[in-house]
Amino acid sequence: SRDDDEELMKAIHDALQYVYDRRMEGDVRVCTTDYCVKDAEAGNADLFTSVPPFLNDEDLANKARERLLTWRNEYAQGLYDTGLLHWMVEQPLLALVGDTLLVHGGLGQNIVSYAQKVGDKKGLSVEDALYDLTNRPFTSFFKEGLNDAKGEGESGVANSIKGRMKEGFAFEIILNIVQHRGYFDKQTGCQEVESVLSYLQGEKINRICVGHTPRDYAEELCGGKLLASDSSLSRSFRAYGNHYCPLNDLYKNDAMGQSCSMAEFVDKCDGSVSLLVRESPEHEWPARVQHLTMNELMDLGETLDEL
Image 1: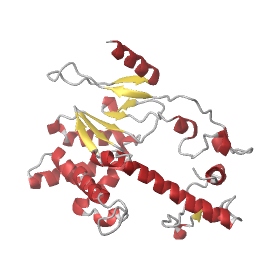
Image 2: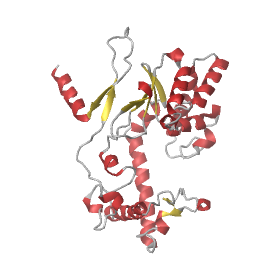
Image 3: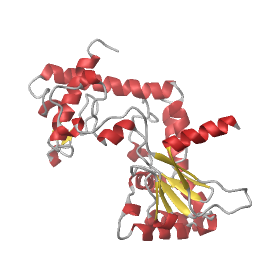
Image 4: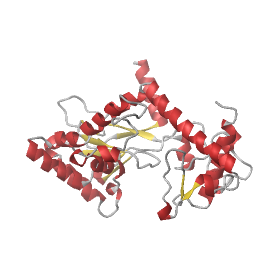
């Protein structure tokens, strides 16, 4: 920790508070010294040049901008040094586990249809075609990048993902997996779930499990065929949503705006997890999952410890 870390953190929180209270999230971008997401044509402003306390304090703005970049680099370096980044690269973007398709945001009907066509041409199952289109290029790309952690040379991780991950529309497909939210459309969501599952009948897949759709507790939708597993376990997310509100009293100001001051921050996590168990490999998977709250999960853990 540097001597002025707290001062700069508080200044950034104050600036974000200003943005949140005026509902300006879509109009302001955070620009660092080496990478700027500012989109001038769309009229987006830079946090460090357009928002107080940086608006009339160029020195403070420059210090905060550079420190934010330092924090980002240190965070990334920590992921690398601990080996966590290497572990993350080994994890699949989508997986078929038991009778469930696990995916981050969703899998569009057009994507699984394309995977089937690719599989037919290559003599692959839909499952193997999906792996070939997503997990394989993703893992290969980042493993190559990790060999050059500083981002130097043609294989550096600093190079454009979109520019280099071109094979088989890998970038577009992976983006769909992360960003797709069609399952939650009240009119057509369950129809799309049914359609996607129809392509996976040969894999005996009966449900889709997604995250990144935060609710108070894990829920089953579409007659049990869609499991929304993100139950807002994070204490800060439950209190403030996607807002970067200060959790440390040192960073809070005397006039905290409505977006950060109204919610009650609790000391322990809440939410629920979903449990899917079958009696044996010979038995069918149950039609519905069991939802366990955090307290029930802790009780279950204590019971298992006693066995």
